[in-house]
Image (cartoon, rainbow, N blue to C red; front, side, top):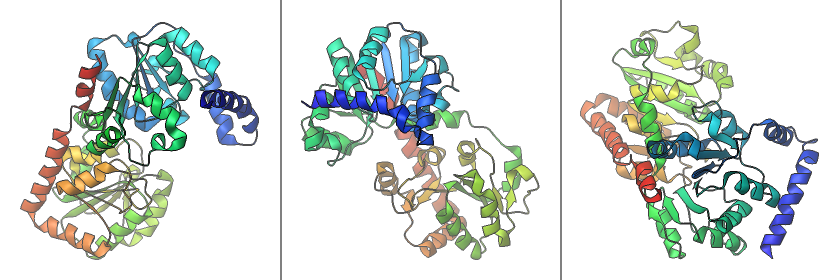
Length: 400
């Protein structure tokens, strides 16, 4: 019964999408972007990799790189659902193998399997499209889930998620990014294997190709460094509080999540004479630099003794793996329940969730003055990240 209702709903949604788009700019853009996008030339493939959006595509990249050790690029197809993920992926090195996932209408799905006939499908984290998976099973496609993350309240364990539970149960391999997810799945009768988080592979690869900035190094000039990564107002207020204590031997670099806020940040912290990177008028005499340009943050972490990561006050924590791979003391706001890696970092001893700005400020000042303890914490972060690299190769060893 569910299958017929879903097929009808998917068909209706596809019909209504252009109509609703008349009243919604976002949906109109979603529909137009898809209609104007290119499809990969139809040909049978060995591996179909699907990512919902940009975050999942980043998780998929180490998997793709491992597959390319054994297979030609033409044997791989990459699909993405969201415009934000697609718009970035088509700028990358695998652009000719990337296309939008067709809407989950039965006709589209059957045409997809007729055109590409994938032998194996690798889904990243989630995005369980019912028709694509159900028809894929009928066509003999083997399904795998990579970087799976589950809690007991995941929708597939609810009464209304039973049809999806039955589909996922048929996956040939489920590889989780954390051990708790494996326990949860197995408690519900689904076999799973903890292989780790492929994002560690990704950030390690990025770190190996990091760019060096002579002007930033001149600005730092041997001082301790705190990087605000993808910051919001709450993190910048913490820095304002820290600066009131007049920390010595400390350079601060702010990389806001929204570049439109750079002028507002400069005004908010005006009493500390912040400089903007693109103005080029900063030197070792300054202690506060605002990065008002894109593409630098991942490389900035190589200079970080401390990393204060944005999003921890809104429940949308940004990437904390990037600073960890370089070896950095990491801190973030307290709303991180949805991010198991935050709890893992805290337990490992090199990260903290901030619940008191005075205590946080005091700890930063103490560590600046304590070289040995700071070095020990930074080494903990680096060793933790190093121990978690290799998830992609472990996954692929089970799939090939």
